[in-house]
Amino acid sequence: MPPILLPYQQKWAKDNSRVKICQKSRRIGLSWGDASISALDAAQSNGCSTYYIGYNREMSEQYIEDVAWWAKSYELATAPIEKDILENGDQSILVYRVRFASGHKVVALSSRPSNLRAKKGKVVIDEAAFHDDLPELLKAGMAILAWGGQLRIISTHNGIDNYFNQIIQQTHEGKFDYSIHKSDLDDAIADGLYQRICLVNGWEYSKEAEEQWRSQLIKDYGVGANEELFCIPADIKGGGKVFKKEWFQIIDTLPFPIDGIRFWDMAATAEEVKKDAYFTASVKMAYDSGNYYILDARAEQLDPADSDDWMLETALEDGNYVPIRWELEGGSAGLRVEAHLKNLLWGFDAEGVRPQGDKVTRAKPLASDAKRGNVFLLRGDWNDRYLNALYGFDGTPKPLTNDYTDASSGAWSCLQLGGIASILGT
Image 1 (cartoon, rainbow, N blue to C red):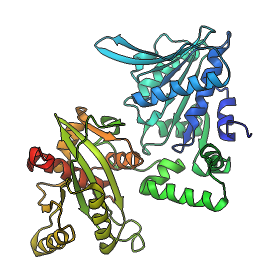
Image 2 (image 1 turned 90 degrees about the vertical axis):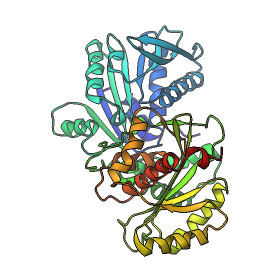
Image 3 (image 1 turned 135 degrees about the horizontal axis):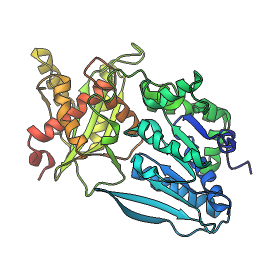
Image 4 (image 1 turned 90 degrees about the horizontal axis):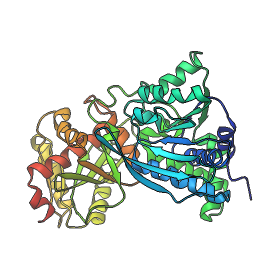
């Protein structure tokens, strides 16, 4: 059997720098490998506790489960995973914890900076670029260094102006003496990532299959691939001006089955014709008891004929109970498109709707609901691409960003103005 940690994971684990930073591709197992460090540190009598900071509950829970897995693999004595509710001022904080026989522990906390005060040991800030107040969080984390601790900062990039990217650039300029790691998708593949995926899943490895897997992954991330997979921060002008990623909670299941509505933004241009063309995009959204659920979001660069085929295939996939809406353009051209699409989608509840106001005006109500915590995403491989697109929206022309946003605003508007009860069939 090969070493359980791949070379880039080993390099990260062996680095004992006081502050170390890793800019990484998504889904390469860096956080999983980091959990092995925390388990070993906590197991030794002369070791230390580690405090993990993720930007959502799912990340915190997963990291603690990974620590417990490593402890079991090492045959270390631990108590069962604990889950507590702690009161911190006017805020209740969900805390995950693994205690080791040594007396040390690994604790997953929320990203509130005050949670790190008066702690000793090591701190891990995961997906640092996506935390609400990274500067204050780092300020609190740095205090742990005075007692011989360590600060580990891990993240995918989230825009060129993000503080995570700024501290990396300032380190390269000599302002800080931090250790910098970089593991993009190709680095990970060269170190055996796809071979390890094949080993875990029982697939037969081949170079051709690896290249196909890589190409499909890049296609899945679309215009976000450079940032999400290759550690190239996006120059997102206005990033976060209307939507912030942390406003959207990702859930694994719906409270009960909801059909919802699907809205299409019909910008059809084949990728072969123009690489920076707009996308045909659709968002499936549902409503219940004050909450909005985004069930699916998809986008492709297609010519009109392929766009029609894809629209029909999606309608058949959703079923007859899901109404279909699209933005109705003005004039006779819009009427001709509506007649064509109604004929294409015969047997479905399908019609065009006229937009009200400019793009930003239409997006703000959905953004307001999201900010209040009323918009949920059903977990899927489309989540990152979708959230990155909304994050970059500011009303200026941007492929994919505007397409996803217009489809989302349209779905929200239909659920509101079209009559929620009639759309849900209740």
